[in-house]
Length: 86
Image (cartoon, rainbow, N blue to C red):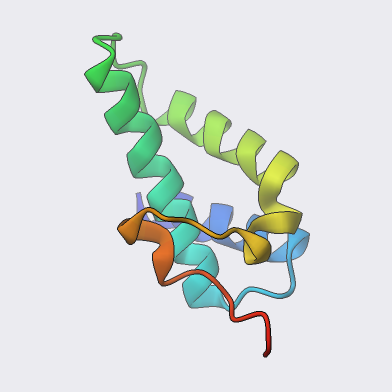
């Protein structure tokens, strides 16, 4: 799992150079966890790490360049919000 998170984190950093490694890693872990939790709550069958990795990679490709601007009200992601003044 650690290797998958590391690869996804590096891909996110390629898409968004405004994130630190730690911020990018937090995003990857958060997206992974949220996808799996949401799928489980919906009663969907677990389709493995590969499926989750594909979804997180798709989100990185689509939303990665903009994640540094994400303003979440969700406490889990609030620490990832960049101050507009910095």
